Picture 1 (spheres, helix red, strand yellow):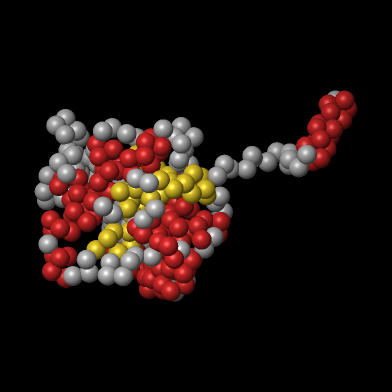
Picture 2: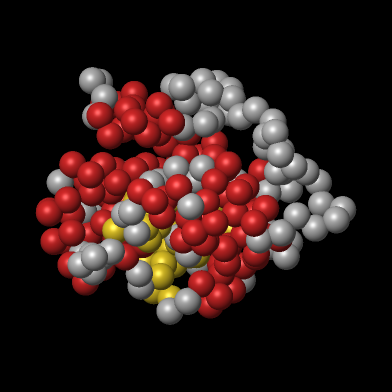
Length: 270
């Protein structure tokens, strides 16, 4: 017994000598986050530039892609863990059977014209080109708690963009929308918006469960992140309160308590 105790002490001293703490979990690997070199990816870039990922206790390594096809291929292959890519391309990848889950929204190019915004067809076309944040449902992928922290950082980036736009854009000047262009940023994955685009693209193939798309929109992650931020804010930031007021979350998931109801159309059920 004494020999065993001596051996354990020797092992502990050896571990300390090389900088490893006994009985401690190995440091989590960096999350590889793919993104497009596009103003719509501003929330990702702001979270990185403002150390908001680190504030959430995460180490995030961003990886730039020239197009969504290459980024989604890397995501499906496990070469990146999370990706901020085009909405339409992401939905098409999901329709092909890839194990992807949408966890947050991003930026969408808009005209800024009220007439254009009420034009449903034109609006949905622009939405298709917007950014959505997606995780891969693969072995070794970040767990729910880690993804919620990542989305919390994106929500904080959105607050920064709304409350201090000059400071926010100055930290990522090359990604500021060009003069004459208007971007709307929203970290909410917004299932019903995605369902409208899904229907427009005619991605609901025969034989698919009606809940097929809903099963790939992981809005619980967004709701958990939003709830945690709102709980820590005390008197809520007005932008954060607006996000919470419009969030549509599963029951007992977020402050609004809103429950997704069955759509009146033939959209996939949540």
